[in-house]
Image 1 (cartoon, rainbow, N blue to C red):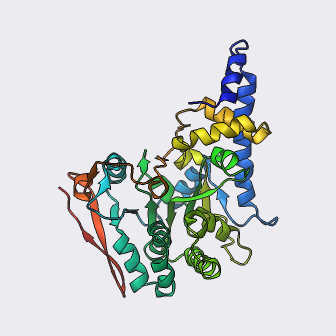
Image 2: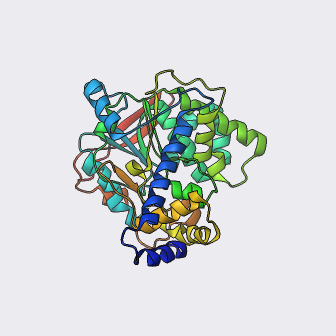
Image 3: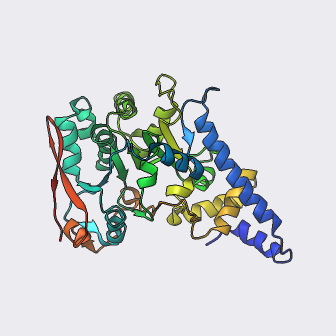
Length: 357
């Protein structure tokens, strides 16, 4: 699908094989992506917040630190229960185990998520009990990254290639930006949004406790108004990242934000009508560039750097939209690799094997 504005532009380009406006529009969107990430990287004139990770920097990091992977090779995924997972998630979830046969795959449930706060983070327990299940799932991913570390990824993510090269870099936290077309056309911002659907970390990084502190402070001040994105989701991560009172490491490799091509090559297709409406209404350069990008890459922009793609199921806002469910045993049956479930106690988190052969 493409927006009407882009369709009209394509008709005129048929008379001009160079299609220069389209190419310039895509170049402009690429420039906006770089500038918005640089805005994240440079805060208050001080370049100590983040490294915008490019392929060449990843290879540099590999050559320097190939024997010292700081982020554990653990994949965390979560769903309400292991007994009723939407069947369409099955190939996506299996892709993580298939691409990482030597990693440990851990599956968390809503009960496991709450137990994290009951046993290990009681200072946030009142909030965890009061908010909805999607906000609890948000809070739990920050807590488990702080306690255990590893790679957290939503169940509607599909792995395209192994993450070993990314985990062997010098960075201690990996964050990522979602498509700039989302922020330009849906949120009216030219600044890249940090998304919390895929994140990786060393254990014990103080950033995650600050995120949880900010959630608690926001909840205590405002309560839960049903906006999970603002209270516990991507916006609280971004607000914490930009917080002037949090001291990040002076090492520029401490936190890395990867461009959208790595993890978010596709937009939320169910939201295309809203983006198309904005293409009709707006003619400013960022919107023009975003609409050109949507027109040129209607099925996403996949590159050699693409390690995963988000299918944007938004089950918390759209519902499961499924009459066909499978169990975790169905999802992972016959998979090689280490599959585990968490055992959360007051002394920590242990994993026990869950064999699905």
